[in-house]
Length: 133
Image 1 (cartoon, rainbow, N blue to C red):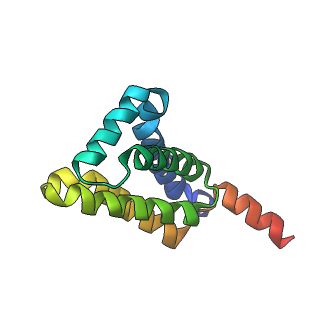
Image 2 (cartoon, rainbow, N blue to C red):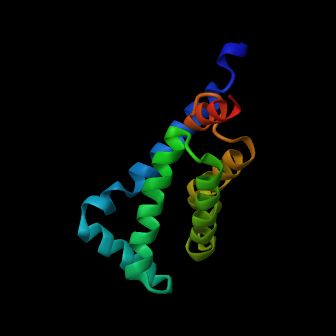
Image 3 (cartoon, rainbow, N blue to C red):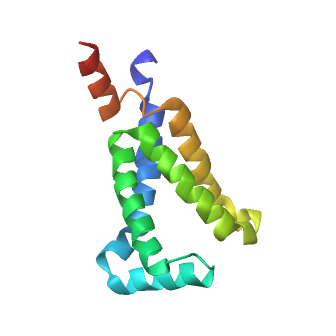
């Protein structure tokens, strides 16, 4: 079982990072979707929605990719923690527990990665080994 240690974190990172990345991809490739997201943010009173929308989208896209790779994991998980905390207080707090579960899952997933790091199968682990030598 020791050989498989860290496999759970790898699978979790693939799921979480992939979900974050794919969740915003349509906004990246479609200016109409980005404008729709900006209008959504505006409807909740988010300041500067035409700036906030791409900032949130590109942060999620980059952080999702870095989580999948396991690179700078604790830092990007912290950024995503802030992102999902804002999402919770701006939008999800108005929803039922069932409806807010996806955002809460990402919030708690971010906490997991902050506390545990990327695990053995990650670029963080590769670079940590190189810095020890």
